[in-house]
Each structure stands twice: as structure tokens, then as C-alpha cells.
Length: 90
Image (cartoon, rainbow, N blue to C red; front, side, top):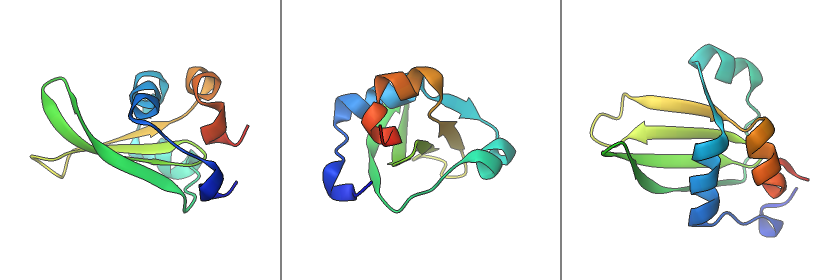
């Protein structure tokens, strides 16, 4: 999967974070696949401004900009894979 063949729109990022599964740091470390191709941006969720990063293969992060120590980790599983098949290389 080359980065040049993959695109992630703002709507795709919104879909990712509404369908991906938030997981513990331990599970993320054990199961995530971090590929060099990634996308990033910012969003507001629950009144908090976050910086986000989503890697091809479905690992993602949300980090609160006000307190950069608050990072949420996500994995693209069933619903996310169906909603964003290109992100998963399908």
C-alpha cells in the first residue's frame, strides 16, 4: 500500500474516530500496526481540541492540545474497516 494511492478526507477522519475502537495503551502497543503513511489534523470532540494522527492500517491517536499528556489510542476494527476499507488496504 503506497501513500500516493491513499487519501484521507476530513470526513474520513470524522468517520474513523466515530467508528474506530478506543483501546488501552497496552492493547494498542500489542496490536497496532504503524505504517509510515499517515495523515494528521485537528478536531474538536466534547468541547476539547485534539490533534489527530491516523496511520494506514488503522492505528490512530487523539491528543488533547491543552494537555498534551492526554492521548487516546484507537484501532480500526469491524465497523471502521467496513466504513474505510482503503485505509485497511482493501
